[in-house]
Each structure stands twice: as C-alpha cells, then as structure tokens.
Image 1 (cartoon, rainbow, N blue to C red):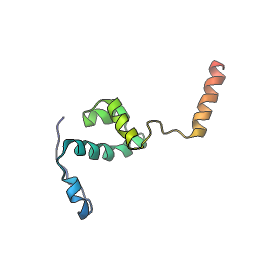
Image 2 (cartoon, rainbow, N blue to C red):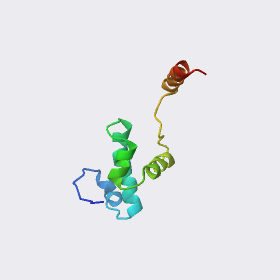
Image 3 (spheres, one colour):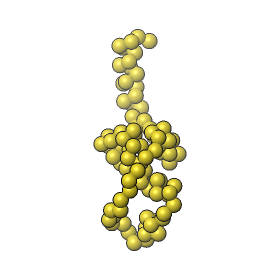
Length: 91
C-alpha cells in the first residue's frame, strides 16, 4: 500500500501521538480517521479495508473492539425490517 504524507491540523498537544511511527498505532489512527465515512455511508467497510490494506473482517473486528458496531441500525428499523421479511416470506 502506497503511503503519502499530508498536512493535518491538530492541537499542538497531539503532536506526539500523530508522529508515532508504530505500525499498529498508524493503522489505528487511520482506521479511526476513515470511520466517519463508513458511518455516514460514504464508503463501505470493504472499501475502507481496501484503502487501509487489511482484510474486511479484521477491520470490522477492530471497530468492534473499539465499541463501534458493524450494524448501525436502530431497534425500530430492525423491527420494521423483520416485520417486512416475515410479511414477505411468512413466519
């Protein structure tokens, strides 16, 4: 995966954390930076995994370990979907 540097504006106190060269920390930082685009459905988990150079299931597992759910449906939406499924396919 090709990496480039881009200027990012952060609070001065974050500099030690942003300049961390540990590969795992770099992955965590980049995964958290891309998560809002997954959450607002701009990109999929699969596309994010491609961008980050990791397996989709590994990325999903990472987000789950951070408390970020793979499914972001409300209970009401899920209940409506189940009712629709049951109406179409029977109980």
